[in-house]
Image 1 (tube, rainbow, N blue to C red):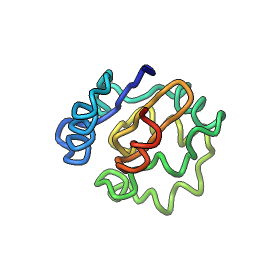
Image 2 (image 1 turned 180 degrees about the horizontal axis):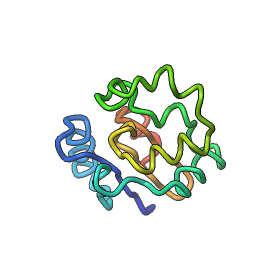
Image 3 (image 1 turned 90 degrees about the vertical axis):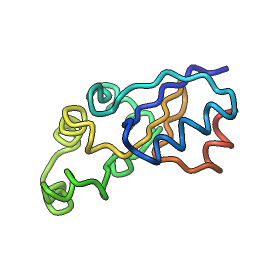
Image 4 (image 1 turned 180 degrees about the vertical axis):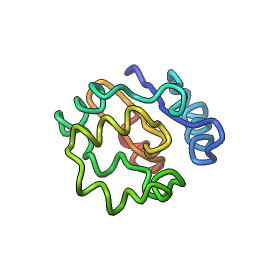
Length: 119
């Protein structure tokens, strides 16, 4: 079985559903609190560079912090490096959960996508 790391937030209902799914499917995983221990900038950069995920997909556009900072308008002004730095500093800006495997990154909990990729 592949090594699976799951970045999630304990109070997030979607994350709870995702972890329950993994447990029901007997998929071993390492859980990381996305708020306390967000992915490092280098890790985020490698996902984008390897085309494992697009930068735009990483943003939690429905999150309170995203809206409070008016990032929908402001992101256009930031470079990719600046955006990755912001995401690595503030885990609540990241869409969650994020499942990281050696050759794949899944963002958000979409059961069909997970079924296809977590075998």
